[in-house]
Image (cartoon, rainbow, N blue to C red; front, side, top):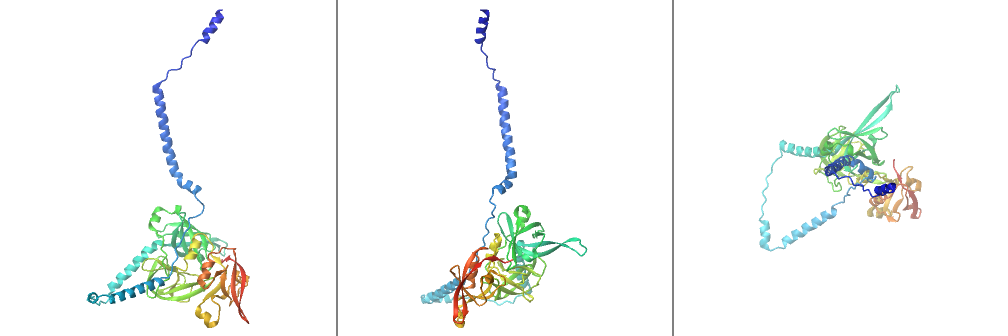
Length: 438
């Protein structure tokens, strides 16, 4: 029985909870909050430090598309303005006599004044000011070559040319230059106006014009440099006229950041190249066959490129420049890492006058099918007249160029042309595989 009573006593025993220590609980709560704040602060610092890297991991690998607005002739606008002026003059003549008399009473006082040397110096200073401003967009491109001398000792040689900052796709600063200075090089360097030098890579080049676009990583360029450089403005050169004041920048005489001034002497010259015809401006500015750079108008806009390429180089001592408006579509393709489509003809437009005088169908007259080109492989010959590509009408070289630029390397297209025989011109179709000129 005592054993039983003891067992019952044990079962009825109650275990009390340990008393809550409110002071200790408060300390623990405060410590937890402190740790949470510290963790949040550290996390914030780490996130801010790694944000650029994280964004690069999750960002699209494709660069932002670089678009270059195309230009048009303003002949229609000029005609409209002329018509408006004519109508305004006619309306003035139809007004009431007293109002017409009031118009005639307007007197303009003019005073002839000869320009002094100071006036010329002021004008020259203004042109140089334009040049200094645009020079912020000029860079020096250096191609580093490797070689071995006659003693089998390795060495490095460099070639230089000027370049032009033409865009920023948020990942790379885009620089336009000539391919021949960076062809088969070990490395490419770009030096900005403040002498900051960065490595660059080739995006694409055009084997026809010889122009190339380089990419310089934006993250590698110091903020101080970014604040001193600017992206060049590519102007409209389609309406350029003789006598316009221009500034030559880059290395027109072989030394970069030169500034030369002069006038446009001719806008009527053209050069025929593979698949394209280009307008070439001549100036009275002294040139050097080793030089390259850009031609700028008085608004500080680039209106032409002068190149070392043999396609555009002439035996003369004055500077010639290729119309920038006619290069914009090529520059846009290269800036976005795309190839320039190539078929390989040298042609000219058969105008209404030529068609009527020589009894030739309207279209693009093939002056030459370039040797080993896709055009020659497909069977196109000198004297053929192209009238359609993939059923799209071709009535001029401009049509031909615009259609060609929409094509891709390796794409097969149907070219419809006329070929002369004993009975006259007969239409035929051939298949051409679009290539890329290297």
